[in-house]
Length: 381
Image 1 (cartoon, rainbow, N blue to C red):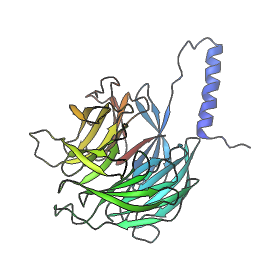
Image 2 (image 1 turned 120 degrees about the vertical axis):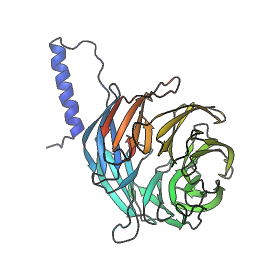
Image 3 (image 1 turned 90 degrees about the horizontal axis):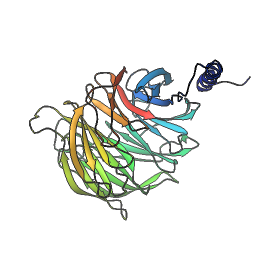
Image 4 (image 1 turned 90 degrees about the vertical axis):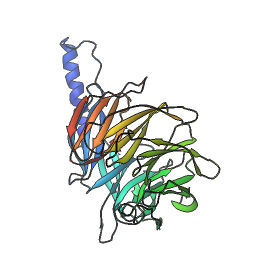
């Protein structure tokens, strides 16, 4: 007997219902509701949670647990949307002092476990897959290290390349050692970047996706004590934005294709002039057309919208707005770009805000919300 997946069952049931309603003349010209599958990585026992997203009502409905993986900090999707990769911020995995990197096949809207590997150090907090889908990078926060893996049909090799960074910054509480926080690839897929929050720098490498090996190619040095956390490239292929967690600033960078180097063009202050409390910059979202860029800031808990010049990447501030909770860890636009979803880690929930695709403005009021224990990452698949 053929195994029918949950999604196939729901689809056939919906089709049958539609046929009955049409035959009875009860259904007029109503358009079918399009639902999206969303995975939420949580730093909680549940692991990777499975939600249905309805863009008409802007609501998330829990469908179950997609995979039992501990303390998930990040999820990454393969270029062909066939595989999902996770990072687990652990102190030990399979008897070794490292975090865990895992891979899953995405089929029928469900996750099927493929592989799980040791990273280079403890506290694995981020993974990134290259544009060919053949190479994965992992960053280990507490280990201050990074690792690369070959990918074959979604399965991860053992670590091919590892590096333990040794730099540290001037802040005695947060920067006694290196803290690798984020991995990314250049727009042309020739270079890879590891953001080191503890060392106030971005390590640059020449990447070889065929072998997953890395060679040093330079360093971008941020302001002392700034804590570079994430790096996102603008669609123009020449601008990158580095979120500095400890300073709550954003370095607007010029990316040089010839050697992969990054050069500071501008530095954006995210905090209001009258704010003097604790603060931590967090994440970045860029609209598909490159016209708008959004930043999230924690402790004072806001989103900050900017208008971007699509050619130069230059940012013009628009306004700060509510994040819907405490400690926005990750946020993302839904596929329609009419809604912004925010994972608020410390208030245990995801808040949804309306977005005007023309003006880029975010609504102040929460449209909907759902309770999630320690949400860390929202991934539309």
